Image 1 (cartoon, rainbow, N blue to C red):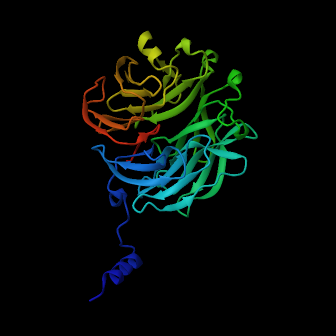
Image 2 (image 1 turned 90 degrees about the horizontal axis):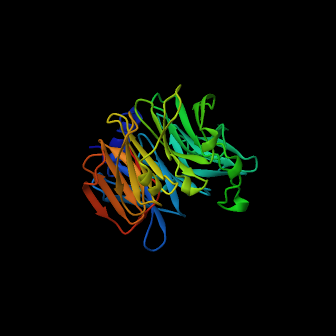
Image 3 (image 1 turned 90 degrees about the vertical axis):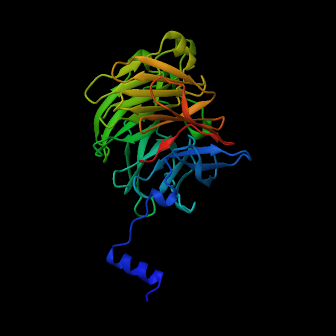
Amino acid sequence: MPDRRSFLTGLFALGLCPSVTWADAGSPAFLSAARKPDGTYALFGISEQGRTIFEIALPGRGHAAAAHPHRPEAVAFARRPGNFALALDCRTGETIGELHSPKGHHFQGHGAFSEDGSLLYTAENDYDYARGVIGVWDAAHGYKRIGEFASHGVGPHDVKLMPDKQHLVIANGGIETHPDSGREKLNIPTMKPSLAYVTLKGELLEMVELPHAMHKNSIRHLSVGEDGLVAFAMQWEGDISDSPAMLGLHRRGEDPRLLLAPEDEQRELKGYVGSVALDSEQKLLAASSPRGGVVHQFDSDTGEFLGAIHEEDVCGLAVRDHKLARTSGMGIVCFSEEMAGTQMDKTRVTHRYQWDNHLVPIS
């Protein structure tokens, strides 16, 4: 009788061996980076019940991650300006690839996979030339860099694959930085944030810019609905007392729509939105402000403000099964009973970790 190894070898030879999936890593619903009590950092898999399924050590503070659409792999990005991006096997915790940006570039905290998972696109800053770049990596062959193209703006941060799987949307924050100046923002008076829609080869299809009076509103984070609606979150670099709109919606071929909460609630954001989550089917939108300790919710059809959820140092947001998940720097993982305008939590779990900015859903 053949042994198990011989049996598996035969299956591989015939192409019949089942592929490895996220179920092999414990079926996490989300990924998030966090700081542990001992001051070290890790990437965690989080279940639908808010418990941690796995943790993988990181060499420094993480920001966001890109989850492979099929395999239990994730690329963890350092906080901007990033000095590391690691491809991780979430079953074993092993590093299966180290991404090194070209000389004169650094990572900006976010990336996105192609539909089949063969390519990874990374937001980068070409800091000597003050231009944004999208790096292209071969995820099927050890995450080797195979190209790049312009982000068509300065300071790209978030990048998402559009629902047609043939285009990307890029949040160009408009902020110029250079490693010689750390995280200092070098061009506030001349900022020019934008949304850029590009093909997977980098051809610009549409550019969306804010009115000049809003040019200090850095477009930072994105959430894309299944119908192609793009929600974008902003961070204001002007006078905080101005309390401008910090959240917008855009559909290709149309003008952007900026959303405002009532005056008192708008001031609560303190000019800073850290994450955004859109449920296009339910027409609901959520945006978090860790500085304000609040999550604002809107009707994405009408722009109506639906209410606020107050949570200290809240930032990470994601939607799953029409329920809003959120994390905070206080170690909280919450799942709302319903997404719209409620503070009732179906699940609330407290960990000893300081969750970082983003909660990344795994499809």
